[in-house]
Image 1 (cartoon, one colour):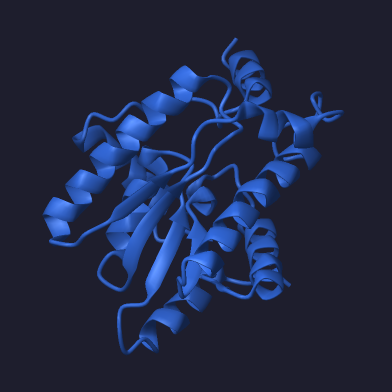
Image 2 (image 1 turned 60 degrees about the vertical axis):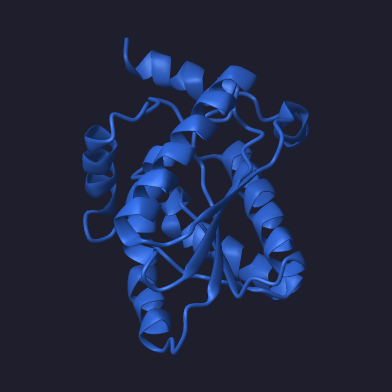
Length: 207
């Protein structure tokens, strides 16, 4: 049976009696827009920008710039401080876990390994730095399975020793809202997930 992780997140928020520290793994600025808008009033938030899957350092740098634009906007709008930890680009970290799965379609085994790599990093950083929760922006995408992401995040959190904030940010028109805010801020909005393999697949779809 599918779990509505948006409802589960709301249950957690309703029980809060303070603003816990939350580490959000962000894949890009545009995807973080609606996530930050929704959570900033409930949590003390830092963004972890860890995306070794990106196909070039140029793409990585471009997305970091856009992420910082989003943070500045949300800080100004909400009078809240939002930190960013940008882990230096190292594409080999992704290529090592993607080896042998280069021909997998988007959403397949290669993507599962990529999600795991990034969620594990977020969980370990959250534990080491004393955060109350960690989560990811990935579920805002219509192409990302929130059931898979949450089960993975919850299992990692239990193993590492830090709570995973259950979420499905595409609910309540989250993806639509992210597009609206991105347009308002004139953000660079990429048309592929990030790796060279997803880029090829995206180009094939556009033919």
